[in-house]
Length: 193
Image (cartoon, one colour):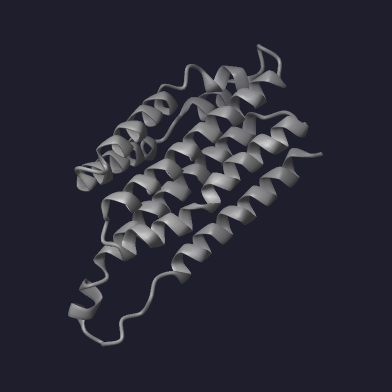
């Protein structure tokens, strides 16, 4: 299989995920700012998840620029990632509708953690199918951001039952870490062009 097919499929799934999330936003029944303000938990959870999905799309895009080929295990690893990401609309809506209650915030974190682990697994499967001196191996490096993200997600899940707002801050911290562009892929591609 060509890697372009996997990229196109993944892009399509991510686009559908974002579409489902926006369809969960309900229009207020009254044409006032006060009615709109009441939707702040739903809008905030949507915004958090939109950024989260955008980060995955961006990193997935950069990763596949240095991937040379795909095989069966790579396809399954990518589907594993897409499985976790496909749960984002559900947990986003549940968290927003319940005003960031403890259990939905914790379950949201489980989905974020599952996505992070699935991405890590996918990169390891890709590395196993590429040469040790490949562009992919050079670009992935030690993946400090990935490891710290998993630790922050675990901490956020643990505190969600007592301090859901702190969990939200930790989820936001991970997003900020990843919003700062990861230049590893770009540096490797520039050096080898």
